Length: 533
Image (cartoon, rainbow, N blue to C red; front, side):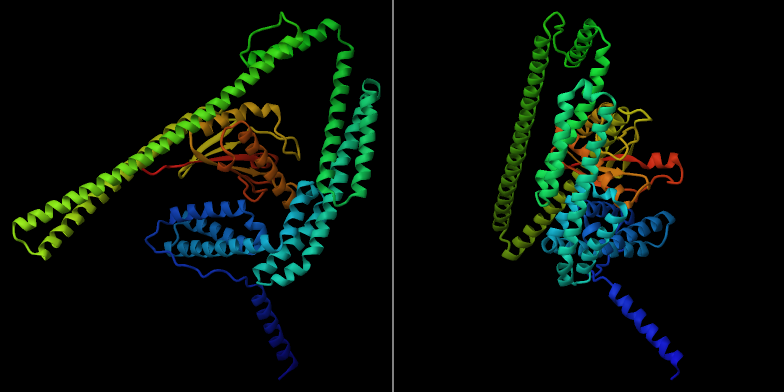
């Protein structure tokens, strides 16, 4: 055999081995009956993929989750182009199997690689994604641990875990120092240039002193993460306060005492007016502040009472439903017993045999079951129509809440999507600014309009920057909106979730500024909870 043939054989062997090594085990594919509605199945799969991302399957089982997403995309495209139903069902079945195994892998990862997962979360929370290439290197090593689990190589993953933990920890400390403390230094320097040493000398000096102390603490206590984050956040707040006090002092310096008093009065009066509290501008400022605080306390107490009343009413409704269900079951048993007795008496009076009585009983039961099933189906159809009618009515109400430049509101199956194009965040940050409060108040109103619902807040970015940084920023912005809604008692925390998609779901091309602006968005998805009778 020639050398050339030997080489060709070895190339084939290597290719075969590499393909075998890349094959990730997954659960058996369970075929779907061709009677299934492909549109509904694809929609269900879409929800399952979103839920998987919420549970971090894209991180904890990256290969299988990516395959599931690709199968979902293929199924959607096949559905749009009208391809064979059997092919669509095959793609859905494959994705389901991949998600099932990915979920199992995630459980193993959380148990066996908890330290690495925690170290990654800490580094991201500190802002380590700003070190794009360095973070990407460690992220790839982390994903390597997860791929090892997917390839049933747990020992290898556990063996390499400590190195990944240390590298994430180093990134976390670097982020705290360079990002947070760097922002502190820049803020203090800006305050100095604007006159902080003149207008707030004591605060300027103490902020500088605290900065040095935090810097020294971080260097000396690399494992005291909670303490260093707390101290870094505190000194950043202090530096930002220094800057704002400097700017306000500069403005007030040129104002007359009366103008200053009128400014304070205006602020208090605007607050009083919004709270619909009594106008007390003829009283001392301390009295006006007490008036505002008392009104706020009253509103909070009233809100608490209202929530308690709502909970009590819901409990009473649940008790009534349970009671009615019990009564229905009791009546059903009573009527069944009476029917049996009557049939037996009729059979006995006619001298019928036991077999005839049983046959007649079976016919009566079948008749009753058929009538019950038909009634249940009729009721279910009526309930669906009523639910759809109520959904459409509420959908029309919610649409009227928003102007065209604030949000797009549309139906997506049984869900309502509010695409917030009018919400704006500071560049690279997730802070909700006051100018967004009015828009978010409308979102609150929309959620309350639909009553008992499950809400998902999705964060999306354009493709500028690294994928890791975009995914983290979109998650933080979605979390900020979620926290706002929960804090304002719009919806219970266990009925709302936040998911960051980064730049993987664009609506327009990222090649133009207009397209990138469209892709930077928050989507609020409301899914009404339908209670079966």
